[in-house]
Structure formats: C-alpha cells, structure tokens
Image (cartoon, rainbow, N blue to C red; front, side):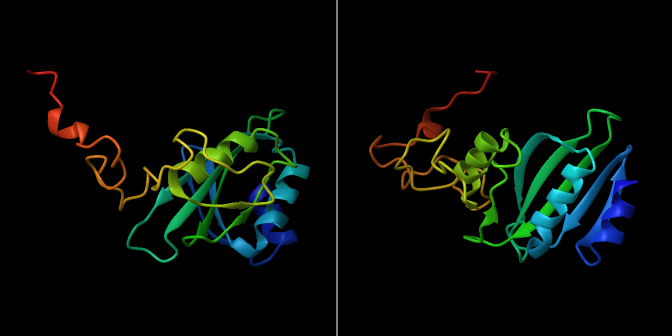
Length: 164
C-alpha cells in the first residue's frame, strides 16, 4: 500500500492517518509536503481531483489544506491534509498537476491561503478588490456591510424565506 511506502521512504512525513470507507487520509508535515507529493505521483496517483481547505478557527494551525488524489490504474484514492497558519504559503502544484491552477486560486480566493510559485494567483470567484475571504469562520454571516460598503445596506435584511 502507498502509505507504508511513504512511511518507509520518508520517515516522519506522516503526522497522522486514518481511513473511512476505503479512502485513506494522511496528515502531512508542511515541511515534507513536496517530497510526499512527488512520491505519490511517482507511485501512480497522477490525477488531482480537488483541493479545498477547512478553517478550524480556534485551532493552531488554523487551516487544513486538503488534496484529493486518484490512481487511474487501480482506482486507489488518497487524501492529503497539510496544516497551515494564516499567511503561511504552501508550494504550488501547478507544475506537477495542471488542474491545481484553478483549485489553488479558489482556495486562495475563499480562504486567503497563498500558494508559492503559482503562475497567476489572483481571485477567481470574488471581485478583485473584495476585502475578505468568504469561507473563513470569522467572515460575517450576513455578508457584512464592512465588506460591501458600496451597496449601502446588507441584502440579508431583505431576505425572504421560501415559506413566505
């Protein structure tokens, strides 16, 4: 299995591991992230399905950046998690996985997590001068007038439910 191979080749790179319904999850040391990615790529996990993040607002480090990988030959899936703090950059995987381009831009746009070496790290979903990161736990739930000052009022105040 790939996990035993990683432990053998890169001792200390795996901080934690667990499995759920056949999908393996590894928590990787940030300093060893590139080494692990290179190894799993050489082992056949050559399709990057997704990159996302989770904001653990009260935890240090605050974020988990989550990578979903697939081996097309044997359908093995692997989830890699890397823990980072605010403004802590991860290396971009665009040179290894072309699909990482928009995935990394989305994570940057929604969480503010930078990716070092990304060829065009800029907002993807929000407008260019938007001052916040909408998927962070500290983002105002009503959209916040402080983020949308040019609108004048919050749209949430005028929202109607489907029952109305």
